[in-house]
Length: 94
Image (cartoon, rainbow, N blue to C red; front, side):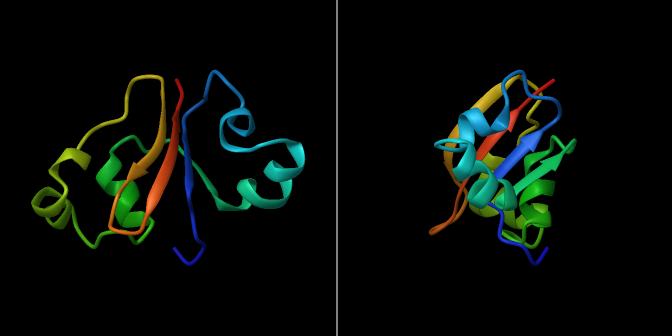
């Protein structure tokens, strides 16, 4: 993936993603929307590989085992540290 992604929206959130990920409508339209991935994938390691943060599930298991999980519950994960310099904001919907 060539685009830089900071936000992930999984499934159908019960709250509008812009309410959680942006300061206001302008911030959402001009900044956050372009760096948000909308997906139905719930296995976090697959998302991290798709985003280019890690190369394989084995690399994640070895270096960040706490990131090997399914995101099945409705949730909002604020500033999840996925590598030394990279954070993600994740909205998990139904």
